[in-house]
Length: 213
Image (cartoon, rainbow, N blue to C red; front, side):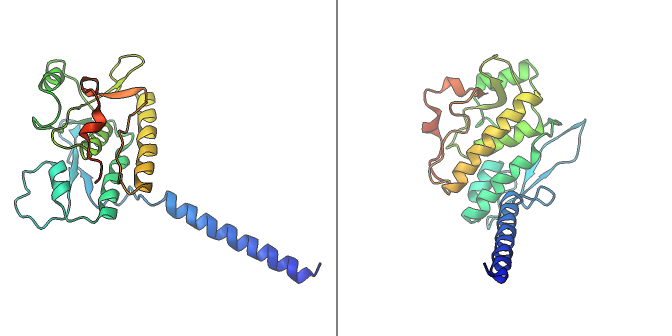
């Protein structure tokens, strides 16, 4: 075989591999957690902090609205809205205690009282997944920011092993939703070994979430 043909084939294979590497790199590095556009952390207060959301909006009366309503009233395009939701994954492994407070629209009253009476805390990484999950609900949100391992019945808000699994579940779910353009939203923890506090009080929780963002 002509040596020049061999050289050309080798060169073409190298170029193709280079292009493939660049495509894979771009897809895996899409989320830059060092430079978030919509989310940030509050100042630390008594060793606690929470996530601050900032979304562009034409409305001037958004100062006291919750993140969920700020998100819905924003003028984000759908691709930007998906990017904004994806930023919540940047708080993975942040086990700082969250001092985020949620209104009466979040969780059943008995579960809100449970958190107070039993002094149940949740971390920033749990807050991130909980707020992300709240974004897909129609009003109100029936769950509370407490993750439970269904096999053990134990709260796992600060269990590294459990949180690693839950984040993998959520990331897989998010990839599926993004691929479909969030046109048919499913329940993130469906058929998993984990649930949010209050989830088992609802007959079919998927009927309560928005089917499209």
